[in-house]
Each structure stands twice: as C-alpha cells, then as structure tokens.
Length: 201
Length: 201
Image 1 (cartoon, chains in turn brown, blue):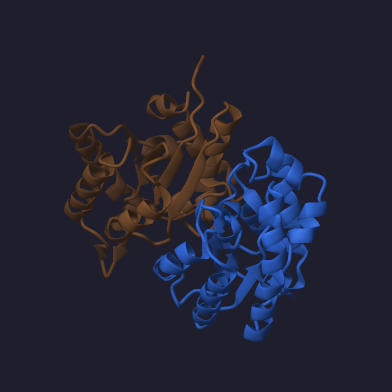
Image 2 (cartoon, rainbow over the protein chains, first blue to last red):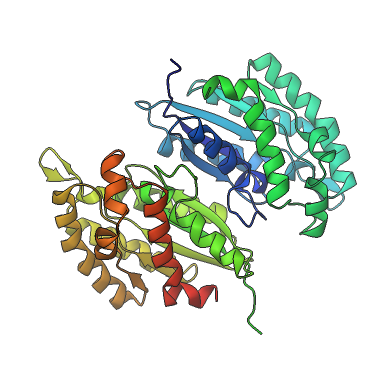
C-alpha cells in the first residue's frame, strides 16, 4: 500500500507561481495539488508567488514566510520557481544579472534543504523574444547548480514555447502571463515529473 | 459602463482562508475571485491564510507580507478572516482570549485602512460545539468593532451552521475543515455580499 502523504508545501516564486492571469484561480500550483488530492494526498499548499518578484526579492523574504507556514512537526517540502523577472530589462539591462540570480538560488537552495525536500522548476517563457533568449541562457546554469546541490530541476522553457497555448495566451493577454490552458500545460509537466511523484505517488 | 477593476487583494487569515481540506484547492478565496473574473475583473489574489494562526500570529506577520505584495502604484485591497483558532482551547483555556482578539483586530484594521479598502469576514464554525459557542460570543464583538471602524463585516457563523454541507464535511474530515461543498457555500455568502460587490461589481 502506498502511504498517503499530508504534506505542507511552500511554493516560492513570482507571478507565474501566483497564477496571475488564470481566470480559474488555480494556476499550475493549484492544478498540481488538486491532482495530488485526486490520488489521495491531502496536501496543503502555501502559494508564495508574488508579481514582479526577482530572485533577489524572493531571497529577501522566503525564510520568514516559510518559517511561519512549515512547522517542524508536520511533513513539509519546498518548491522554487523564479528567474523570469530577473531577465526582464529595466533601463536596457536585466533587472538581475545571471551571476546574481545564481548566487541567490544557491543561497536559497542550501538553506531550504536544511528544512525539507526541495524541488526547483525552471522559469517558463513569456511573450517577449528578448526575455526568452535570456531565459534560454539561464536555464542550463540553474540546472547545473541544482545538479551540484542535489536538488531535482525541471526545465519547462522549451516545452512551453512549443505548447499550443502558452505563448498564444500570453500574447493575447498582458504579454507575459498565459491563461487557463497555458497553466494547465505547465501543471501537467510538473505533475508528471518523477521527482514530484516521488513526494506524492 | 461598469469599470473593470484589476485589484490585487490580500486575504489574511487561518486555515479556513487557506482552503485547507478542499480537494479542488480553491477554498472560498479562489471561488470568490474566480467569480469576479467571470464578471470581467482581472483580480490577483494573495492567499495569506496559515493553518493554526490566531489573531496574534496574523498580527505579527500581516504587515510585512502585505507590503511585499501590494505596491502603492496598483489598485489594492485587504480582506481579514480570523478568530477560529483564538477560540480553540489549549490547556482548558482559549488560545487567545476574546479581549486580546479584539485588540489585535482593532490594530490590524486601523493600519490596513491606511493601505486600502478593507473588509472583514467573520469566523466560520467548526465541528466542535464548545468552539462554536465561543465563536457565537465573539462574532457580535467583531461586528461592533468593524462598525465603529467603518469596516464592512460579514457574519457567516449561523449561515454555515445551517448549511447542509459545512458541518457534515468538517465532521467527516478532520473535525474542523469542510470540503469543496462547504467552501462553496462560504464563497457564495462572500460573493453575494454587497460590500464585496462594491469592489467588484
């Protein structure tokens, strides 16, 4: 018999983690957790995605927000997903340079692993080719850092660029965020990921 | 023509605000915001409900969490819902006495009103008659405080005690939290509330 897990999971990220633009209010976080419930796991999700947050913003707040939500006496886990806002230009330069993104990621992953099991989902694409080009350079660096740190990493950039809905919905919306179909595609990638299934069979 | 409002709303509360126990992952917060989207309002929800939080816990964290999420340059609003955990006994006395609950509520409402429009939803019932008796005493005191403060207050206790699903789902579950039907009933109360409709017609 497979043990049913009543995990409390903190999802740390930006607007993509928040599910901004999804009229169903589920986003990829809600959909993947509802899928876990459908398999019998009574998960509690704490969605800590904030619009416009860079890796620097998340680095500044994640620890206080997680410690208020994940007491040591309950099974707990953490999922990170960031990088898109780091790659958005402001005054012709990215809001956070890739070297700093990696530094923030390394600090967060190391500290988070002391709390519980950690996963990292790579940054999804947006409707802007320049940002996507920077994300394409960032993704393998995040993957390499995760590999060194022993944190499972799920790249989603190419799959969502090839998805029939993600970019179309983003361009039809605010240019950055997909709608329900795009988020459903991202949720399917996360839900089918073996590293995630290891938590919630 | 009715203006469509792209509000960012912070929902501050406990497990009932988190939607704990709802296999759909929507809770009352997700359902009321999805209803606003269905009427054309592109709301962003920040669900800041934390399991086991009393009014003291929320008082300690709400300001930092809200200031990270509701920048002044975007339309913003706040919804509070707490009190259940204050009324839960620990060593034969309520975790937070009603006088202290009122003090925390007064401090939070006053400071929140300086940020944006504020609503307060009264605490919902649980599967325990003793806790519900304390909630029945607390509700009119919260209502009176809100009235003095000019904050619209929605009592939900009696309506949810009378709801065919809320208590039944709570007793069939962990004793405290309803399932999808109970949360849908609470969402309907909030969604039909004129004070809420004034934000999102």
